[in-house]
Image (cartoon, rainbow, N blue to C red; front, top):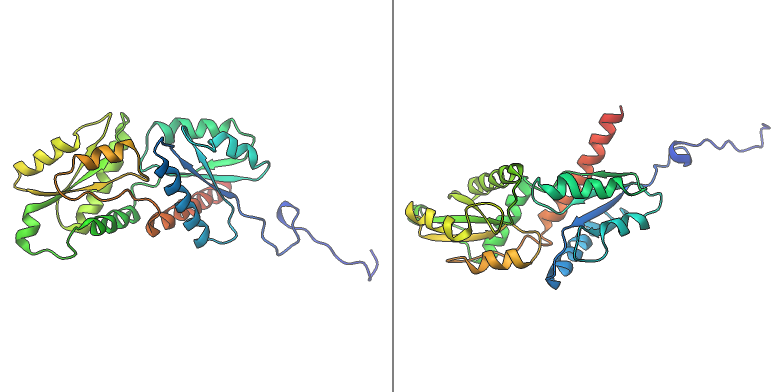
Length: 261
């Protein structure tokens, strides 16, 4: 090498030394729904995530019912590594089986992040949605003794899912200062009407329903219709949801780095 020959040192992945490699793509994994509002909501959340982290490739894949389906999204990534962030609120069959199996069947180097819940940011978003629906920003002691919330979730036969929902209910209860009782649209008990009756038996006659769903759909509508008082909107594209998605993405990268060290 002569003195006039430029030194070209390369770092990881063949990039020039000092330049960081491109980050893995973030793939939002939604369940899918026949309700057209669900796709609109998830795309709005995706846009909000992109706005918070410019330069990060953000993609969308569905488990079922909507396009793009997750296998198609992964196939389109080529050799780009990816972190899959489930837009699901607890552990269950989709998180433990469906999504990992789809990731394993893809040639993409994909890592599945933890589901969104439980996490304090979910309690923040749930509280905000309740305030939007008419939950009072301040309560006197009498109103607090009469009030409660039903946390309406989809439901799962997996006991870990119920454990995660109960943890979110405790986080929301601590934030509101009133009891929060989980209830389910399917596969688990109690239902929303049963939970409402149980709270009424405890003297809680002003019961709000907090929608513990990422996006509108059949179950979210069913639970809202059973509400005896106010019912909040699904979590949707709330800012806390976008921050939580990025937290799960970053958490996944940190866990991979720690495991590789």
